[in-house]
Image (cartoon, rainbow, N blue to C red):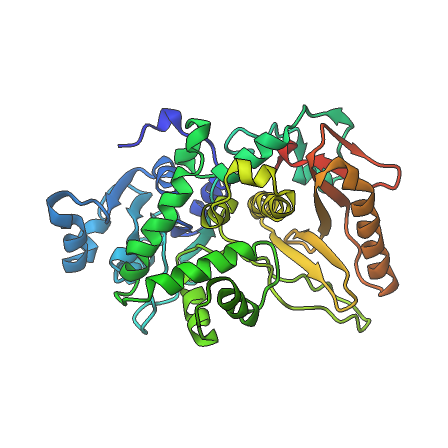
Length: 425
Protein backbone atom coordinates (compact mmCIF):
# COMPACT_ATOMS: atom_id res chain seq x y z
CA UNK A 1 0.00 0.00 0.00
CA UNK A 2 2.88 2.35 0.82
CA UNK A 3 6.14 2.50 -1.12
CA UNK A 4 8.56 2.99 1.75
CA UNK A 5 11.50 3.24 -0.65
CA UNK A 6 10.13 6.69 -1.57
CA UNK A 7 9.66 7.72 2.07
CA UNK A 8 11.04 11.14 2.97
CA UNK A 9 12.53 11.17 6.48
CA UNK A 10 10.57 13.23 8.98
CA UNK A 11 11.94 15.13 11.95
CA UNK A 12 9.64 13.16 14.25
CA UNK A 13 11.13 9.79 13.21
CA UNK A 14 13.73 9.55 15.95
CA UNK A 15 11.21 10.86 18.51
CA UNK A 16 8.88 8.00 17.59
CA UNK A 17 11.70 5.45 17.83
CA UNK A 18 12.64 6.71 21.28
CA UNK A 19 9.02 6.76 22.45
CA UNK A 20 8.40 3.17 21.26
CA UNK A 21 11.34 2.05 23.36
CA UNK A 22 9.76 3.62 26.45
CA UNK A 23 5.96 3.47 26.20
CA UNK A 24 3.54 0.69 25.38
CA UNK A 25 1.77 2.82 22.79
CA UNK A 26 2.58 5.94 20.78
CA UNK A 27 -0.32 8.06 19.53
CA UNK A 28 0.64 10.31 16.61
CA UNK A 29 -1.76 13.22 16.17
CA UNK A 30 -1.95 15.91 13.53
CA UNK A 31 -3.91 17.28 10.58
CA UNK A 32 -5.10 15.06 7.76
CA UNK A 33 -2.72 14.60 4.84
CA UNK A 34 0.33 15.52 6.92
CA UNK A 35 1.94 12.10 6.47
CA UNK A 36 1.06 10.45 9.81
CA UNK A 37 0.05 7.12 8.27
CA UNK A 38 3.10 6.82 6.05
CA UNK A 39 5.42 7.63 8.93
CA UNK A 40 3.59 5.19 11.21
CA UNK A 41 3.78 2.39 8.64
CA UNK A 42 7.55 2.87 8.56
CA UNK A 43 7.73 2.32 12.33
CA UNK A 44 5.20 -0.56 12.53
CA UNK A 45 5.31 -4.28 11.72
CA UNK A 46 1.58 -4.77 11.09
CA UNK A 47 -1.28 -2.42 10.25
CA UNK A 48 -5.05 -2.10 10.66
CA UNK A 49 -6.83 0.72 8.80
CA UNK A 50 -10.09 1.94 10.35
CA UNK A 51 -10.78 4.18 7.36
CA UNK A 52 -10.47 1.44 4.73
CA UNK A 53 -13.74 1.57 2.70
CA UNK A 54 -13.47 -2.05 1.50
CA UNK A 55 -16.48 -4.20 2.33
CA UNK A 56 -18.58 -1.22 3.39
CA UNK A 57 -15.99 -0.29 6.02
CA UNK A 58 -15.84 -3.79 7.47
CA UNK A 59 -12.68 -2.95 9.44
CA UNK A 60 -14.59 -0.27 11.36
CA UNK A 61 -17.46 -2.68 12.03
CA UNK A 62 -15.06 -5.36 13.28
CA UNK A 63 -13.37 -2.87 15.61
CA UNK A 64 -16.74 -1.83 17.02
CA UNK A 65 -17.91 -5.41 17.60
CA UNK A 66 -14.64 -6.86 18.89
CA UNK A 67 -11.89 -4.32 19.70
CA UNK A 68 -9.59 -7.03 21.04
CA UNK A 69 -9.67 -8.88 17.70
CA UNK A 70 -8.11 -6.02 15.76
CA UNK A 71 -5.23 -5.69 18.23
CA UNK A 72 -3.72 -9.03 17.22
CA UNK A 73 -0.67 -8.78 14.98
CA UNK A 74 3.06 -8.23 14.95
CA UNK A 75 4.15 -5.34 17.15
CA UNK A 76 4.38 -2.44 16.93
CA UNK A 77 0.87 -2.73 15.44
CA UNK A 78 -0.57 0.34 13.73
CA UNK A 79 -4.22 1.29 14.24
CA UNK A 80 -4.76 4.08 11.73
CA UNK A 81 -7.43 6.74 12.48
CA UNK A 82 -8.32 5.11 15.79
CA UNK A 83 -10.82 7.90 16.61
CA UNK A 84 -13.27 6.28 14.17
CA UNK A 85 -13.89 3.78 16.99
CA UNK A 86 -13.07 5.60 20.27
CA UNK A 87 -13.48 2.44 22.39
CA UNK A 88 -10.19 1.24 20.86
CA UNK A 89 -8.33 3.64 23.16
CA UNK A 90 -9.32 1.72 26.31
CA UNK A 91 -8.78 -1.61 24.53
CA UNK A 92 -5.22 -0.58 23.65
CA UNK A 93 -4.57 0.67 27.18
CA UNK A 94 -5.72 -2.69 28.61
CA UNK A 95 -3.62 -4.65 26.09
CA UNK A 96 -0.55 -2.58 26.98
CA UNK A 97 -1.11 -3.35 30.66
CA UNK A 98 -1.39 -7.05 29.87
CA UNK A 99 1.75 -7.11 27.72
CA UNK A 100 3.89 -5.17 30.18
CA UNK A 101 6.34 -4.24 27.43
CA UNK A 102 7.05 -1.10 25.38
CA UNK A 103 6.45 -0.71 21.67
CA UNK A 104 3.13 -2.56 21.38
CA UNK A 105 1.00 -0.14 19.37
CA UNK A 106 1.03 2.98 17.21
CA UNK A 107 -2.19 4.98 16.93
CA UNK A 108 -2.79 7.78 14.48
CA UNK A 109 -5.52 10.38 14.77
CA UNK A 110 -6.55 13.39 12.69
CA UNK A 111 -9.16 14.51 15.21
CA UNK A 112 -9.84 14.17 18.92
CA UNK A 113 -13.18 12.59 19.85
CA UNK A 114 -15.17 14.18 22.63
CA UNK A 115 -14.49 12.38 25.88
CA UNK A 116 -17.72 11.36 27.61
CA UNK A 117 -16.26 9.73 30.67
CA UNK A 118 -15.49 6.43 28.93
CA UNK A 119 -11.88 7.03 27.93
CA UNK A 120 -9.05 6.50 30.41
CA UNK A 121 -6.27 9.05 30.05
CA UNK A 122 -3.70 6.40 29.20
CA UNK A 123 -1.13 8.19 31.36
CA UNK A 124 2.08 6.19 31.67
CA UNK A 125 1.02 3.79 28.91
CA UNK A 126 0.20 5.95 25.88
CA UNK A 127 2.29 8.94 24.88
CA UNK A 128 0.98 11.52 22.40
CA UNK A 129 3.22 13.06 19.75
CA UNK A 130 2.26 15.98 17.53
CA UNK A 131 3.04 15.82 13.82
CA UNK A 132 2.64 18.80 11.50
CA UNK A 133 3.07 19.21 7.77
CA UNK A 134 6.61 19.05 6.39
CA UNK A 135 9.20 21.67 7.26
CA UNK A 136 11.41 23.09 4.51
CA UNK A 137 14.19 20.76 5.62
CA UNK A 138 11.93 17.70 5.40
CA UNK A 139 10.61 18.66 1.97
CA UNK A 140 14.16 19.22 0.67
CA UNK A 141 13.77 23.00 0.36
CA UNK A 142 16.25 23.81 3.12
CA UNK A 143 19.91 22.85 2.84
CA UNK A 144 20.13 22.17 6.58
CA UNK A 145 23.51 23.88 6.77
CA UNK A 146 22.61 25.42 10.15
CA UNK A 147 21.28 23.32 13.03
CA UNK A 148 19.07 24.66 15.82
CA UNK A 149 20.89 22.34 18.20
CA UNK A 150 24.26 23.73 17.05
CA UNK A 151 23.04 27.29 17.63
CA UNK A 152 22.35 26.40 21.26
CA UNK A 153 26.00 25.32 21.37
CA UNK A 154 27.04 28.68 19.81
CA UNK A 155 28.24 26.91 16.71
CA UNK A 156 27.42 28.64 13.44
CA UNK A 157 30.45 29.09 11.17
CA UNK A 158 30.10 31.87 8.62
CA UNK A 159 29.13 30.36 5.28
CA UNK A 160 27.35 31.15 2.06
CA UNK A 161 24.04 29.32 1.98
CA UNK A 162 22.91 30.05 -1.58
CA UNK A 163 20.76 32.62 -3.31
CA UNK A 164 17.09 32.83 -2.41
CA UNK A 165 14.45 34.38 -4.65
CA UNK A 166 11.35 36.12 -3.37
CA UNK A 167 9.28 34.23 -5.92
CA UNK A 168 10.45 30.88 -4.53
CA UNK A 169 9.70 31.86 -0.92
CA UNK A 170 6.19 32.82 -2.00
CA UNK A 171 5.79 29.53 -3.86
CA UNK A 172 6.90 27.51 -0.80
CA UNK A 173 4.40 29.37 1.37
CA UNK A 174 1.48 28.91 -1.04
CA UNK A 175 2.37 25.24 -1.59
CA UNK A 176 2.83 24.48 2.10
CA UNK A 177 4.32 21.35 3.61
CA UNK A 178 1.75 18.79 2.45
CA UNK A 179 3.61 15.63 1.38
CA UNK A 180 1.28 15.19 -1.62
CA UNK A 181 2.27 18.66 -2.87
CA UNK A 182 6.00 17.98 -2.96
CA UNK A 183 7.23 17.59 -6.52
CA UNK A 184 3.94 18.61 -8.14
CA UNK A 185 3.92 21.23 -10.93
CA UNK A 186 4.36 24.73 -9.56
CA UNK A 187 1.13 25.94 -11.15
CA UNK A 188 -0.83 23.46 -8.97
CA UNK A 189 0.77 24.62 -5.71
CA UNK A 190 -2.53 25.72 -4.17
CA UNK A 191 -4.55 22.60 -5.09
CA UNK A 192 -3.92 20.52 -1.96
CA UNK A 193 -4.58 23.22 0.67
CA UNK A 194 -7.72 24.33 -1.16
CA UNK A 195 -8.97 20.75 -1.31
CA UNK A 196 -8.19 20.39 2.40
CA UNK A 197 -10.35 23.41 3.29
CA UNK A 198 -13.25 22.17 1.15
CA UNK A 199 -13.10 18.65 2.65
CA UNK A 200 -13.00 20.08 6.15
CA UNK A 201 -16.06 22.29 5.59
CA UNK A 202 -18.08 19.78 3.57
CA UNK A 203 -17.44 16.60 5.58
CA UNK A 204 -14.98 16.57 8.47
CA UNK A 205 -16.66 19.13 10.74
CA UNK A 206 -19.79 16.97 10.65
CA UNK A 207 -18.05 13.61 11.06
CA UNK A 208 -16.19 14.64 14.20
CA UNK A 209 -19.33 14.58 16.38
CA UNK A 210 -22.32 14.20 14.00
CA UNK A 211 -23.51 17.77 14.53
CA UNK A 212 -24.59 19.89 11.58
CA UNK A 213 -23.15 23.39 11.85
CA UNK A 214 -23.50 26.53 9.77
CA UNK A 215 -21.03 26.00 6.93
CA UNK A 216 -21.09 29.67 5.98
CA UNK A 217 -20.11 30.80 9.48
CA UNK A 218 -17.41 28.15 9.76
CA UNK A 219 -15.90 29.42 6.52
CA UNK A 220 -16.16 33.06 7.62
CA UNK A 221 -14.32 32.29 10.85
CA UNK A 222 -11.60 30.42 8.93
CA UNK A 223 -11.21 33.42 6.62
CA UNK A 224 -10.93 35.69 9.64
CA UNK A 225 -8.25 33.44 11.13
CA UNK A 226 -6.41 33.65 7.81
CA UNK A 227 -6.61 37.45 7.83
CA UNK A 228 -5.30 37.44 11.41
CA UNK A 229 -2.52 34.92 10.77
CA UNK A 230 0.55 35.54 12.97
CA UNK A 231 -1.34 37.97 15.23
CA UNK A 232 -2.70 37.85 18.79
CA UNK A 233 -6.26 38.67 17.73
CA UNK A 234 -8.81 38.07 20.48
CA UNK A 235 -12.17 36.34 20.00
CA UNK A 236 -13.78 39.78 20.09
CA UNK A 237 -11.41 40.89 17.35
CA UNK A 238 -12.35 37.84 15.27
CA UNK A 239 -16.04 38.61 15.81
CA UNK A 240 -15.56 42.24 14.74
CA UNK A 241 -13.46 41.15 11.77
CA UNK A 242 -16.21 38.83 10.50
CA UNK A 243 -18.78 41.62 10.81
CA UNK A 244 -16.56 44.24 9.16
CA UNK A 245 -15.41 42.08 6.26
CA UNK A 246 -18.42 39.88 5.60
CA UNK A 247 -21.40 41.73 7.12
CA UNK A 248 -22.36 38.60 9.05
CA UNK A 249 -23.19 38.31 12.74
CA UNK A 250 -21.50 35.63 14.82
CA UNK A 251 -21.49 35.40 18.63
CA UNK A 252 -18.36 34.95 20.73
CA UNK A 253 -19.89 31.72 22.10
CA UNK A 254 -20.13 30.37 18.55
CA UNK A 255 -16.56 31.47 17.83
CA UNK A 256 -15.36 29.67 20.97
CA UNK A 257 -17.23 26.50 19.91
CA UNK A 258 -15.81 26.61 16.40
CA UNK A 259 -12.27 27.30 17.61
CA UNK A 260 -12.51 24.26 19.88
CA UNK A 261 -13.71 22.24 16.91
CA UNK A 262 -10.79 23.42 14.76
CA UNK A 263 -8.37 22.66 17.57
CA UNK A 264 -9.71 19.11 17.91
CA UNK A 265 -9.08 18.68 14.17
CA UNK A 266 -5.48 19.92 14.58
CA UNK A 267 -6.22 22.80 12.25
CA UNK A 268 -4.76 25.35 14.68
CA UNK A 269 -1.13 25.64 15.81
CA UNK A 270 -1.15 28.66 18.09
CA UNK A 271 2.00 29.92 19.84
CA UNK A 272 1.58 30.27 23.60
CA UNK A 273 3.06 33.33 25.33
CA UNK A 274 6.52 33.06 26.88
CA UNK A 275 6.86 33.94 30.54
CA UNK A 276 10.42 33.83 31.88
CA UNK A 277 10.81 33.41 35.61
CA UNK A 278 11.40 36.90 36.97
CA UNK A 279 11.79 38.48 40.38
CA UNK A 280 10.62 41.76 38.86
CA UNK A 281 7.08 42.86 38.08
CA UNK A 282 7.34 43.02 34.30
CA UNK A 283 3.77 42.74 33.01
CA UNK A 284 3.37 40.26 30.18
CA UNK A 285 0.53 39.82 27.75
CA UNK A 286 -0.92 36.32 27.82
CA UNK A 287 -2.54 36.10 24.39
CA UNK A 288 -1.62 33.28 22.04
CA UNK A 289 -0.32 34.10 18.58
CA UNK A 290 -2.76 32.64 16.09
CA UNK A 291 -1.66 30.21 13.38
CA UNK A 292 -3.35 27.77 11.09
CA UNK A 293 -1.42 24.50 11.01
CA UNK A 294 0.18 25.41 7.67
CA UNK A 295 0.54 28.85 6.03
CA UNK A 296 -0.78 27.44 2.75
CA UNK A 297 -4.23 27.19 4.35
CA UNK A 298 -4.25 30.93 5.02
CA UNK A 299 -3.19 31.51 1.40
CA UNK A 300 -6.02 29.30 0.15
CA UNK A 301 -8.62 31.03 2.35
CA UNK A 302 -7.42 34.48 1.28
CA UNK A 303 -7.21 33.42 -2.38
CA UNK A 304 -3.63 34.67 -2.16
CA UNK A 305 -1.98 33.54 -5.38
CA UNK A 306 1.77 33.98 -5.92
CA UNK A 307 1.02 36.91 -8.23
CA UNK A 308 -1.14 38.65 -5.61
CA UNK A 309 1.41 38.12 -2.85
CA UNK A 310 4.22 39.46 -5.01
CA UNK A 311 2.18 42.67 -5.30
CA UNK A 312 1.33 42.72 -1.56
CA UNK A 313 4.50 42.11 0.43
CA UNK A 314 2.91 43.38 3.64
CA UNK A 315 0.47 40.46 3.63
CA UNK A 316 3.19 38.07 2.56
CA UNK A 317 5.31 39.22 5.52
CA UNK A 318 2.75 37.75 7.96
CA UNK A 319 2.50 34.54 5.94
CA UNK A 320 6.28 34.24 5.76
CA UNK A 321 6.43 34.64 9.52
CA UNK A 322 3.94 31.77 9.80
CA UNK A 323 6.12 29.64 7.52
CA UNK A 324 9.18 30.25 9.70
CA UNK A 325 7.31 29.62 12.93
CA UNK A 326 5.89 26.37 11.55
CA UNK A 327 9.45 25.20 10.90
CA UNK A 328 10.77 26.41 14.25
CA UNK A 329 7.94 24.56 15.99
CA UNK A 330 8.83 21.33 14.16
CA UNK A 331 12.54 21.74 14.88
CA UNK A 332 12.22 22.53 18.58
CA UNK A 333 9.70 19.70 19.11
CA UNK A 334 12.33 17.36 17.67
CA UNK A 335 14.61 18.52 20.49
CA UNK A 336 11.83 18.01 23.04
CA UNK A 337 11.15 21.72 23.42
CA UNK A 338 8.39 24.26 22.87
CA UNK A 339 7.81 27.30 20.66
CA UNK A 340 6.53 30.53 22.24
CA UNK A 341 6.20 34.22 21.43
CA UNK A 342 6.86 37.23 23.67
CA UNK A 343 4.75 40.34 24.16
CA UNK A 344 4.67 42.74 27.09
CA UNK A 345 2.60 45.77 28.05
CA UNK A 346 5.44 48.11 27.12
CA UNK A 347 4.90 47.19 23.47
CA UNK A 348 8.01 45.03 23.19
CA UNK A 349 7.50 41.89 21.09
CA UNK A 350 9.72 39.02 20.00
CA UNK A 351 8.48 36.84 17.16
CA UNK A 352 9.59 33.47 18.49
CA UNK A 353 11.10 31.98 21.62
CA UNK A 354 12.32 28.38 21.49
CA UNK A 355 12.78 26.69 24.86
CA UNK A 356 14.48 23.35 25.49
CA UNK A 357 13.36 20.88 28.19
CA UNK A 358 16.14 22.05 30.54
CA UNK A 359 14.83 25.64 30.46
CA UNK A 360 17.44 27.08 28.11
CA UNK A 361 15.83 29.36 25.56
CA UNK A 362 16.67 31.48 22.54
CA UNK A 363 14.96 34.43 20.86
CA UNK A 364 14.23 34.86 17.14
CA UNK A 365 13.11 37.79 15.06
CA UNK A 366 11.77 36.91 11.61
CA UNK A 367 12.42 39.23 8.68
CA UNK A 368 11.75 38.77 5.00
CA UNK A 369 14.38 41.21 3.71
CA UNK A 370 18.09 41.50 4.57
CA UNK A 371 17.70 45.27 4.93
CA UNK A 372 15.66 44.65 8.10
CA UNK A 373 18.40 42.72 9.91
CA UNK A 374 19.85 45.69 11.83
CA UNK A 375 16.48 46.69 13.24
CA UNK A 376 15.68 43.09 14.19
CA UNK A 377 19.04 42.61 15.91
CA UNK A 378 18.52 45.78 17.94
CA UNK A 379 15.13 44.56 19.12
CA UNK A 380 16.63 41.25 20.23
CA UNK A 381 19.45 42.96 22.11
CA UNK A 382 16.97 45.29 23.83
CA UNK A 383 14.90 42.27 24.84
CA UNK A 384 17.94 40.52 26.30
CA UNK A 385 18.95 43.67 28.19
CA UNK A 386 15.45 43.97 29.63
CA UNK A 387 15.63 40.43 31.00
CA UNK A 388 19.03 41.14 32.52
CA UNK A 389 17.74 44.28 34.25
CA UNK A 390 14.78 42.28 35.53
CA UNK A 391 17.21 39.71 36.97
CA UNK A 392 15.77 37.00 34.76
CA UNK A 393 17.51 34.29 32.79
CA UNK A 394 18.85 35.53 29.48
CA UNK A 395 18.57 33.84 26.08
CA UNK A 396 21.34 31.40 25.20
CA UNK A 397 21.52 33.08 21.80
CA UNK A 398 19.74 35.65 19.64
CA UNK A 399 18.97 35.06 15.98
CA UNK A 400 17.45 36.90 13.03
CA UNK A 401 15.74 34.34 10.80
CA UNK A 402 15.73 35.68 7.24
CA UNK A 403 14.10 35.07 3.91
CA UNK A 404 16.16 37.06 1.43
CA UNK A 405 19.63 36.27 2.72
CA UNK A 406 22.36 34.17 1.11
CA UNK A 407 24.65 33.72 4.13
CA UNK A 408 24.62 32.46 7.71
CA UNK A 409 26.94 34.23 10.15
CA UNK A 410 27.34 35.81 13.58
CA UNK A 411 27.41 39.59 13.77
CA UNK A 412 29.86 41.59 15.86
CA UNK A 413 27.10 42.09 18.44
CA UNK A 414 26.86 38.23 18.63
CA UNK A 415 23.42 38.06 17.02
CA UNK A 416 23.19 35.17 14.54
CA UNK A 417 21.73 35.69 11.07
CA UNK A 418 20.36 32.54 9.41
CA UNK A 419 18.22 32.04 6.29
CA UNK A 420 15.15 29.86 6.89
CA UNK A 421 16.21 27.91 3.79
CA UNK A 422 19.36 26.78 5.64
CA UNK A 423 17.76 25.61 8.92
CA UNK A 424 17.28 22.13 10.34
CA UNK A 425 16.73 20.67 13.84
